[in-house]
Image 1 (cartoon, rainbow, N blue to C red):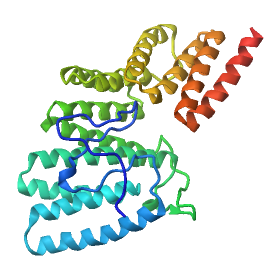
Image 2: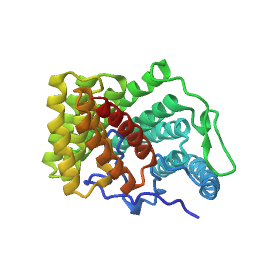
Image 3: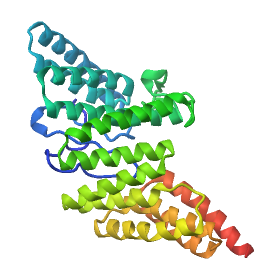
Length: 327
């Protein structure tokens, strides 16, 4: 059966749902007959993986036939479709190789829009590859699939490794190339993704600059969702520990983000923001307010079923409550 995933959106609009501090993709319209994308952190089930492997074999034969027949555009479309399937299986190195072939075809055809799409996809996949290098290796890098269909991983090299940092630097390079030829939607997404990559590299100044550019384009596009995420990224970018002045500057930004998220009925956006406010209050010694924020973060996590945020909020709430009792 064909894979399921997020419904692609039409060109000229921003893909939804947008998430803070997560690479954002530009989706393609359904009429191009490209496989639907699966959400990045959602594991591909075994039956879908088997379907995808069969489809990949068909696409490989199609690309070869198009090469022999000099049908260069159809060859490029086959590479792109295969890359999406590799993305769905979280095999980002193999997807990167296919997107590179797609980029080569677009360059030969002098297809500027196609080149922009290829640069965008290469940038996002290098960011996702960096995540895998941070926490473990994906299936095509040595992992496997257990009997329940979950991708198993080996320990990753960590944030300080050259491989991790090089992947993020390549992501920035490709997103910048995408930005150079993109329309307003593409530039919004490119700046959003570059800001996240700079943040992961520890360059908060460049991250803030790019999030501010993304916010400008979101205003230009009259996209409330885009403005909400750009503001959220601005508020959540600065890492701990914070000085008193930094916390005072960040707090109203995060509160504005929460207000916009509530207006958009984005409950999934609340937990991480309340956690950050709780951390700020704790850093200032206000453990009573910290407990209140962590309780709100826990409530938001329970409503949305976010187990990771629920566990983190539970832990921080317990620590803040214990410190409040000692005061």
